[in-house]
Image (cartoon, rainbow, N blue to C red; front, side, top):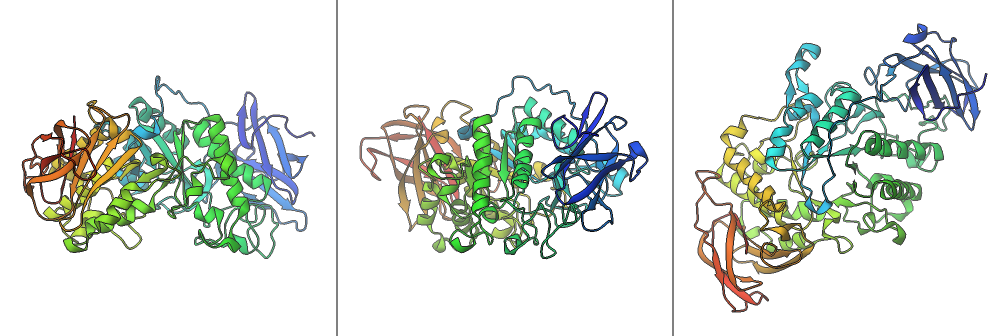
Length: 604
């Protein structure tokens, strides 16, 4: 019998049955068994298309049926029962593939992905963000789901963020996980709610004007519960087989399971996955996990002997596809090595990412706010962190002080690191919010991590729910974040410069630990913004700084206001009347009030 003439890999329903297609170049025979044929090992055979592909149209199969491929290798007769690498749903990571329904009623009309320079990201881990009470009845314990996250979308909209970044949620082994140990990247974690649960999340987020960015993991696959390992029985050196490198290039920190970026079918597999998140699941961007381990065996910038040219070309190819098909969507590299080539244009030999997580910001800013000794705060390092950009573009970097990586792996959340066991202390509140001011006023795409806005304590633990009671006890800090985000997004048409490219870091006082910088887009009233930040434990009734223009500069934000916390100093910071007396390499100067460990934002 002939193979199928219908398109697509995996299990694709059509009117009258399901097309099954799989790549197994070392197979002698391939069958598909499932609930539709009572798991018969011989009933439904797939037929060779050539080049290692096998397919068939099975009329009795339907949406919701479970299935596996039965592969017999050319050199031995023992059948291999394998889940579908392209499966879009599984019963669980060590269970069966499920024929998934692609039909969904999308009704988020009028939505548009926000421009990159106006994007504020909220990173979220579905399993620990908010526990779903329904999960307890089903599992015997509580965990987060897409539904419980949806129940907090109004909260996130009111916080004024306009993008959520979902930590990896491909089907992974074990019940609790960060998600980066995915076994099947096309399937969506069943305990979170599977494919329709994810579609509903995207749809509901878009109804509220919130973009969805998804974490993809292309640097390794598995290792646990991964049927792709020696998928069709072939391997060299008893390594991973057709989907993986089978030599020294397979080494990763997570096992010998790096995909073979030089094999066309594997490259296509990874490309298809990236495009599915953007075009079939309507995500607004991708954040690529640990790209250093795609372009180099050991994840290094300065180790050319172990560079993976095939990995670099894969990054370029997929980003080229994204740019040509949906150029308004974000493609973010998490490389953490300040590699300008990641975000350099494809035509110039770059990888073509839109932006990258910026190690050059997070490390010096955390260092400047965590330590207890004011004298050790390096304001010149703060200046360099704020000024950093790639290829002359401020928005080629994502800036933050907290993330799932920085708040774990031997570290804790910023307020906890400032004062262990007293994340709600005066100093923890004060210096962590100074970090927030720098994140939300510096050039770049700002990001905050779940719970940061209400002083979540401890470290990031994927099995522990956020302490939502803090939205009450720390409601002032929550309001502080909201106010900052709204100014960053120019809600009141008086801080447009915070979303512009331009920066002049004009004031650095290493003795008193005070810095100031000027942000603008086109310039002029409602656009020019001056930010003054005090990283020292001393308040000032009158502190002189430079201004770009004379006239009245209005206070738009003062983090020392005791409405944010009753123990804050409430240092008066009145509007400043700048006069034509040069200061700090600016044409004018003016006096401002400035609280201890505080920041102010002024504009005309």
